[in-house]
Image 1: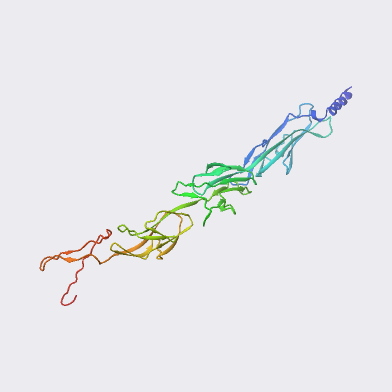
Image 2: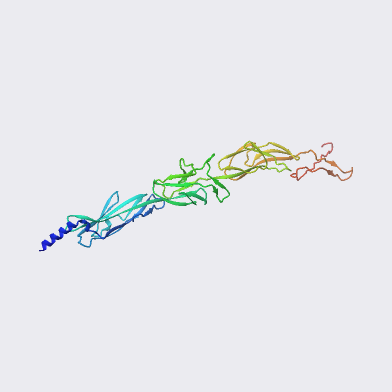
Length: 355
């Protein structure tokens, strides 16, 4: 009778099929949809493996093992001996999308060989964090279609795109900064502090590479510099003139706006006679003695043409108001230029026939 019962039980198992041989579960971490960030500036993330299971309660399984399929290599562990060390404790993975499957196999006396009684597949991701910032401290920038604070970040996989956009703005340091594309020293996007080839458009889409974890996409905005020109003398009603880019302006000029790294040309007049003073050009305030000078601008600047002024001897109307034998009194008309503040009186003396 005992033999018949065993045969009947085996027949029932075969009739019902393996679907009835279900483990309670097998599970593991990384979980479905988990996102891991690479460490620091490393191109890999450390993924710790945790897993658990429950065997079929009835019929009793005499042996069992688990299999981890990573798509690159398969690992096995003896479940009955709870030998978890047969699986790696951690994996160092580069950026990418990972699909891992863990399966549970059990052995029943009534069946031949091991059968798979549980399986779970999880998809998880290893990503990079990238930043978008201006080339000055603070301000705003466009990241993934939204206006955010400079230094904001986004999470991406390798080969995904990051959309950034530069915004013209005050930098809080006295300058207005622009995306320059109309002259020398044009703007360019940078990564790892290096200009990106061809990235000269204000709005740019960057493809993430294997070396980009924790990298910053930098908008290289250029300072708009205010420049004025002036002769160093201030005469009554006339400060002279200066040519700027071949056009003549009264001194002091109004402001010219020059993008940093670009140039502007000024030309001083060699000589003036204004209100009783002869003015002769000596040099620009950078020491250059050339009348015409091209200045490369990198900051707000007031550029000055220096002149040496000498009062003329005409028009003083010097005369003596003293009688012979009385103290000498000398009278003259003041120089019409208010910048003349001192006068010298010289006398010529004849002594023993020598002047």
